[in-house]
Image 1 (cartoon, helix red, strand yellow):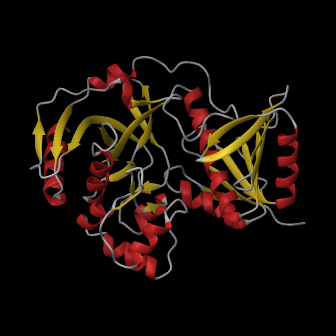
Image 2 (cartoon, helix red, strand yellow):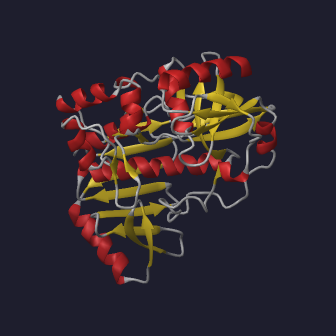
Image 3 (cartoon, helix red, strand yellow):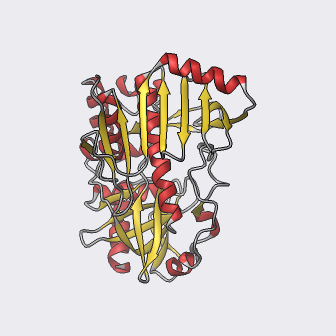
Length: 372
């Protein structure tokens, strides 16, 4: 009998998901992807906690499930930037396939088991981690946690600064600059938040991190990444080959898609620590809010803009365009009210940042010292 390998993910007390596979690389991927952010650890395959993701490479089973789904009445949706066909039976069992990606899935709610089957090991590992995260997301949302579009950094005492803003405003840049200055990086783009005993508690949302060439170069990290790639280190598979080629050739000019979106290096969460020197934090308590706005050529300065937390800062099903809830893992109830009001009462400051990372960091440290 083939050995089974397992990784248990416990983002906080009372929440858990386990990833199992006959391929150790699949469960090792989960360790790397969730790492210290969600306390991922290798465990005995019999030591299962919470819902289970069973992921393997099995082309025959992929073909069989594809035939079953396509042969019956099914719906179609785009999932993870790929076409997905799915069908739900009367018991709530969801079968889904992505024919173009060679992937197949089966969610059995009665068993609390998600089966992920692929024709490629990396694709199966990526999908297993993604769905394990969705399961945890469902658990947390069910218990009243909400998701903010925000970066977050923490001090050793657990006090955290959240940076909010529209896409491109600079919230990720703020998180990375303060993390490089010694803060713990709790999240670079999204966080889970919930009011407990009057305080806003924060948990990270693990995900690949995208950092543009310009910011990497300005932080003195471009050469580190280039050299690690030349030594054979692998980046997250979502990284475009043009980015990899440019890095290996030491080309530092930003790359763009035809849509106008920048192509950026894509980092596993653990690489933020091991490669870029950003210590990852597991939890925090919101103590202050920043509302940055990056303006080319600007001298970093505080702003008198009266910005506060708004509905657009919260992540919800309508804003999720990559992973629709095909498998019915998320609750349908409305989130608890009152969080926005508690956040709005925290010390906060709007900022204008430029492209000088040293000057930006100096301002951020001065402002956070004053707010905290």
